[in-house]
Image 1 (cartoon, rainbow, N blue to C red):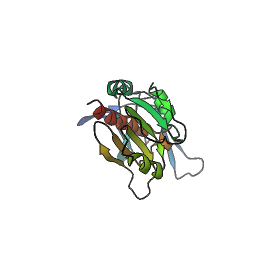
Image 2: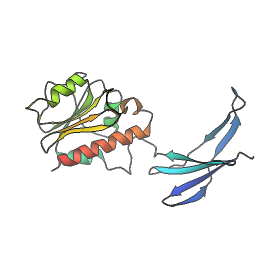
Image 3: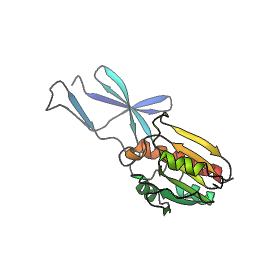
Image 4: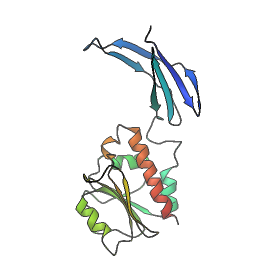
Length: 204
């Protein structure tokens, strides 16, 4: 009873007590470890909770809305339609095509190999080798838009904007997004927001 978990929901600068179903028990493999299983609340937007266990805490727990499509995020379908761009996908890109299908986005599948060149009025997204990235972005005829997930060990994980004009945007992503798309809602939100930001400039 001394370790009974207590929860508080954070809203802005205030928090309020929250009752959540939970189960606290000793680990069967190591009696020094106590396991806490809790059923999170159903939320419509990303919500932060504080967990207190006995004298310990708070530990911040972030709860994401269930499901692939998020009502609290601007729809990618509307952003793509407003941009008037054709969407294309290339590379092995595990989980990417499934993510786009879940967002109800129509796209053309270019297969596992990168195309020979970018096409105007097209947003190409996919997993590229560093060599394919260099070839596509150095082509003087390039007039399309490129969002590439590229393994670049010499760079810190991040998003690198190499060239942005109304006629072409070259965005290199070195974040480990793809392996986490099916299991981590943060990866899905990150990719969602990246695509929204890429599509907005294309509308002008």
